[in-house]
Amino acid sequence: MSVNRKQRVAILFAMEQEARNFIDHYKFIDVSNNSALPFKYYRYDEMNTIELIVAVNGTCKTHAVDQVGTVPAAVNAFALIQQFAPDLVISAGTAGGFKKFDLRIGEVVLSKGLFWYHDRRISLPNFLEYGLGGIESFSTDLFAKNLNLRQVQISSGDSLATSKDDFSILEKTGAKVKEMEATAIAWVCRELKTPFFAVKSITDFLDVHEKVAAQFIQNLNMASENLTKVLIQLIELIKDQKFK
Ligand code: ADE
Image (tube, rainbow, N blue to C red; front, top):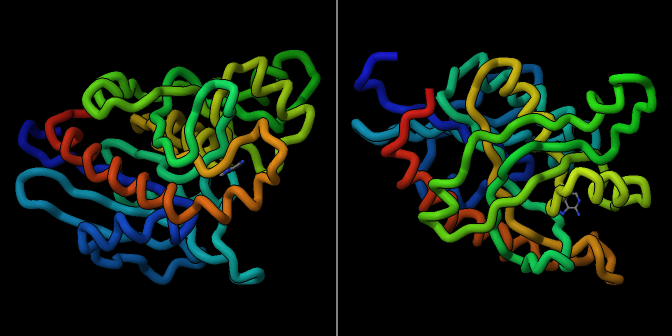
């Protein structure tokens, strides 16, 4: 990399609503091409400082909903890196968290340590560890310190609900937050040697009686607004960093 090349940072969202305020803030330009998959890409180029790419997983052609989950996340991460070769990828979105660890609804957290899966149970020698993921996050220490954000281990799976087995794996790995994309993206980024971390805003508690879906719907707007505020501050810090 030449010394003066601007950093290109890609921020990957699963849901349109999670991304919308951020896209509007920077007046991103839609650079989606007519690919076979309905992923969306937006670009913002700030002279001499940073180039931002927003990737969104798009709408399911069959069910007309946002393409949440690990499969679209991984395929989009791969397509994104192939097309734009970012210096850093960030998974941004919402997540469920444990009340017992004093997380708050609307709190924005950064990834630390390892990314896990809580719904890949493969009880065969060595496959057990493979199933759990354990993929390293880029260090967010500097950002956490500057923005006064908590850092947590994050676990991904393909359900909004949390089963008994999921709970026991979350306890085993120590993940305090659960969502549906980050570990899949972390895997792609590890394979393609691209630095990666996650920023997640808490929409719901996993360990209360109130239904997760109801909490999620009620808090999605507020959590997405908080996410946008933190992302804007984060981008200011990232402008001064070199990742590759
Ligand atoms: N995204 C937001 N809340 C979630 C939860 N409880 N589980 C999975 N993904 C989520």
